[in-house]
Each structure stands twice: as structure tokens, then as C-alpha cells.
Image (cartoon, rainbow, N blue to C red; front, side):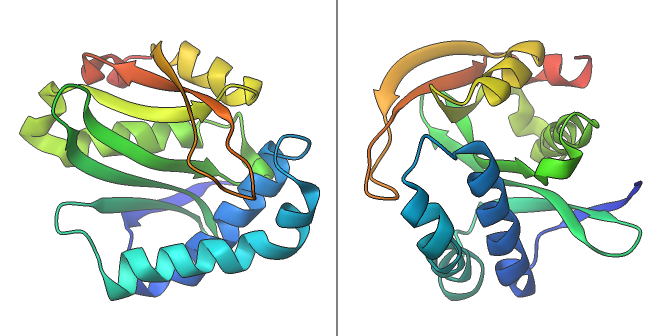
Length: 178
């Protein structure tokens, strides 16, 4: 496998992003989120979200970055809301890598591309939310230099609210060296 390209997310990526998002959740959230949701509803729910975000009501400042294989298959993506929080800065609302390819550096590559895309705004903090039970993701963000603050609860998804943590990089430039 080789990453052929990182490119901006486009409106016509909505269904492919939804499919990868659903695949990621099915892998990472099995045993955390109800199986019925993961097995039956997650793709349609994610498809509605991504069509809304990318096609119907795109946020002006939001941007996404897609990682693709040489074949053109989407293998990862990040979706970002610059300046989302007055204190915590830019929100990485989604960061997903195909489950078969985790550990291969794609997540790191996407985070670095986010920093590059932010330009001057990269001096603001960068943050994301991670489920408390998602130990592999928490280990990855820790290795990438995140600080875990602000425990909270997710909005309802799959019929449940779950404990989560805000992961913050007060100086996102550390992502360029981690």
C-alpha cells in the first residue's frame, strides 16, 4: 500500500467518506456502541451527515483532507473546523483511517496536512474528542503529544451517550515533529 495522494475533500466525496467513516466506527466502536446500530444504521446515518456537510450546507471555514491509495481508494480523511472554540481553537471533527491500515502513518500524515492547511491559524490550539473506551485512539493521540482534558459525554449516537475526552495540542507545531 502506498498513499498516492492527499487532496482536498470535495462534495462528491460524501458517500465514500460516509462508507469509510462507518467502516471505522464498526471496527473501533464494536462492544462500545450497540451492535444493532453498527450493523444496520451507521452507514445511512453517516451518509446523511456527510451529504449535509459536503453537499447541502457546507460550513464556510470547514475543510477536509482525503488520503487515497494509488488505486484511488479512500483510506483516510480528516475534517476540520478552524477556530471552532474561542479557547481550544480548531476542532478536528473527524480523523479516520481504514482499520486495515492503522499503524502505517496515515493518521500522522493527515494531522500534519491539517497543520499545513491551517497556515497562520496553526498557532491556535488544535483539539478533538475521543471516546474514553477507544484505547487505541487514545494511545495514538498520546504518542502524537496530545494532552487529555475536559472529560465529558458525547451527544447521542447509536442510541447512547458515552464518556469522552478532549485531546488538545496547545502548540500544534508539535505534530510536525511527533
